[in-house]
Image (tube, rainbow, N blue to C red; front, side, top):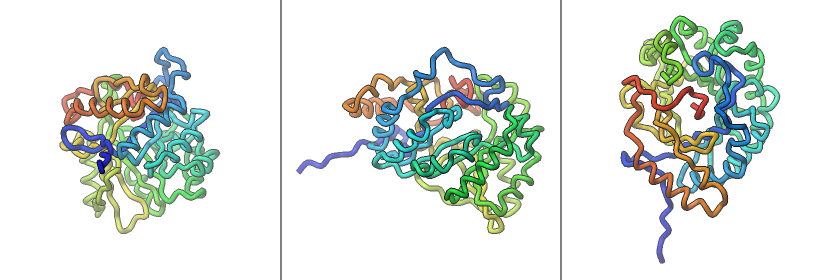
Amino acid sequence: MKQTVEPVLQDKFERRFLYLRLSITDVCNFKCNYCLPDGYRPNGTKNSSFLQLDEIQRVVSAFAHCGTNKVRITGGEPSLRKDFTEIIASVAQTQGIEKVATTTNGYRMAEHVAQWRDAGLTHINVSVDSLDANQFNAITGQDRFKQVMSGIDRAFEVGFKQVKVNTVLMKDLNDYSLPQFLDWIKHRPIQLRFIELMQTGEMDDLFARHHVSGVSIRNRLIAQGWLLKSRQANDGPAQVYYHPDYLGEIGLIMPYEKGFCTSCNRLRVSAMGKLHLCLFGEGGLDLRHLLTNDDDQPALIEFIQQQLETKKVSHFLDQGNSGATPHLASIGG
């Protein structure tokens, strides 16, 4: 009897892709100075051109058929979609998907996070770049600090065992706040993820002024007794550290460190239905024509597998080349 060989998503460097970052909108209502300092600017298309629910189902199903077991729903700000809860439910109900995560600015969490959890959301990341309300406003362009903090508290109330908090540390803006952040997580089950500021096409000047090396932060943590945790197959890119005296954890995302791309296990699909092999690649590959009906799945899988043959061994950020990415909101970070 002939055995059926299940398709896999693997590149020529033998990296398996178990993790899909799926953007559902590039719209955001915040104006973070390292991403959208002038606010969201439409790119000439209407919101109706974002992936619709049936297309999202087909994308996720195809990836799951190839062994992907984790999906992160991103934006822009994904909760701006009126059908966000339906999207969560659709992804969670896909056979083979074990983890359904989202990254949000947190402004709707207090009101809606219970619905998201009931729909099947298993993991949540919230962007918080300062624990000072005034500085939070200065970085994000929104006076919503208390609202976001209430949302994090509410997430724990409805049953999330851990909340991940994303923080971009920037020289002369918030890098001096490291001790305050550490105090915050001492008795809270928060994984605080320090994300190294990344150069993108529209942010060259800001990067030059405010970039802080993630290695310097890691050295400070190790000197204080923080220890490296082992990595799981579908984890994101963070190096996670724990400390026996802390309930919380620290995650470091350091894209400029040598070997950062060696463990790459994630692919991206933009809200416009384009496959991105790398956050800092040279543009997306259109999948939309392969999402019109369920019968397209074999062709969709074959197309993705073919494109993986062209995936490069690494990005070229260390050479000052950020590819075609204008800002992180454009393809979901």
